[in-house]
Image (cartoon, rainbow, N blue to C red; front, side):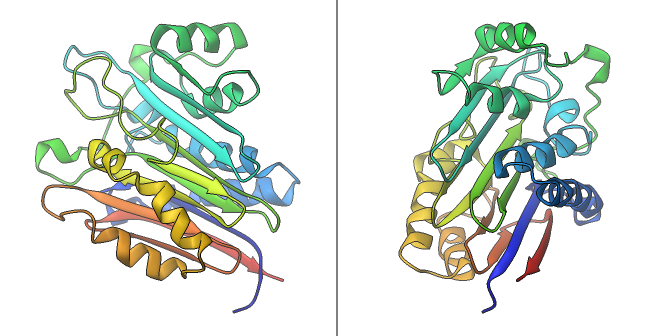
Length: 269
């Protein structure tokens, strides 16, 4: 297999409609433009995920589903193959939580939550999310219809890997509920061998330690397609919506046990 100069994948969430692929492709294109401009691989995935957060068809950012009390709380995380990791959990009031998670990587902390995370974002000058900006146009798996869940991106810039995730969580969940996204090794993982980003039932993804186990398969030399096939078998297609995108130095894989809008862009050396 020819070595890749760069590879970038984006997804709009487990169960996101296939016709939403234009949103995933737009995010991928922004990511590739960032790679070509010389941005760090962590910057690349954050910029791509921010595009998905700004698309109300997806359950993140302005498309976040409300909690049981009508509030909006979001989770986001980012990690690169150098071991930098940052996340926010149940953060209210910010338009692009992925950028706040990125900012956390530059502090002494790894995860900030709730009002403390919101205060950190405000002090850092991140754009607030007004109530009128939340216009979720997707539905999630808790309704029994097509789902729009965690959005994500994985990227390889020819040298380094990164993964990023963002979500509005489960519609109607109690305030304070946190899923797999900000838990390292659960929703995402990146290391010298590749990067992984999951989407779907957050509790099940977390209990399987999905991302780190998938990464370990990549690390031992399994092809991305083989990893995807094996990991999909961990999740029941009826009870557990699940999707995965992953990349190594030579290839990529993406898929879901339901529908999923996703896109990939790459260039060979």
